[in-house]
Length: 139
Ligand code: UDP
Ligand code: MG
Image 1 (cartoon, rainbow, N blue to C red):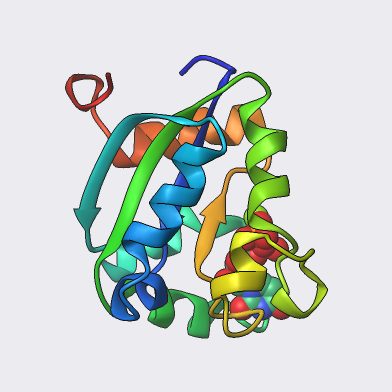
Image 2 (image 1 turned 180 degrees about the vertical axis):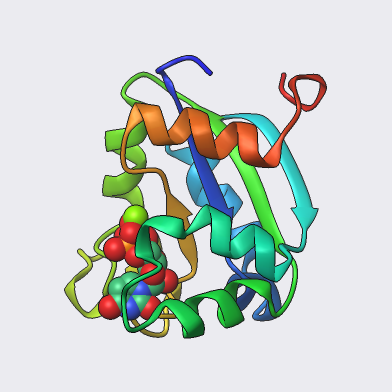
């Protein structure tokens, strides 16, 4: 994946609350082009692999439970400086610390159920995008 791309998920709480449209509007209005997108549900094995870096953390079990309880919208987004700009758009992991106007400030309930994922580096964006999409699903 090119380095002007990032990977995102609208997590199960966003889908359950009917926030898909509002969040996508904010993403596209902020200049991100949708390169790949689908509604999908992660299995327990998928979530454990995707979040393997957090496997020793005390919240890991809850995180896997949360991320697998319903469908998510996964997507690859393109924009100059995509990774950094998207992290700024979503805000801090804990919505209590997220800046006004950020997606997490607007839509996240807690540090655990925080509405959206955004890759933290170009390398992880490429790994995460390839985890969710085949080459034929990227435009
Ligand atoms: N998380 C949690 N409790 C914590 C920290 C993180 O439940 O104390 C969850 C939360 O859903 C977060 C995900 O684990 O988005 C991954 O954590 P990370 O520190 O990578 O945050 P992010 O990169 O998503 O901001
Ligand atoms: Mg992270």
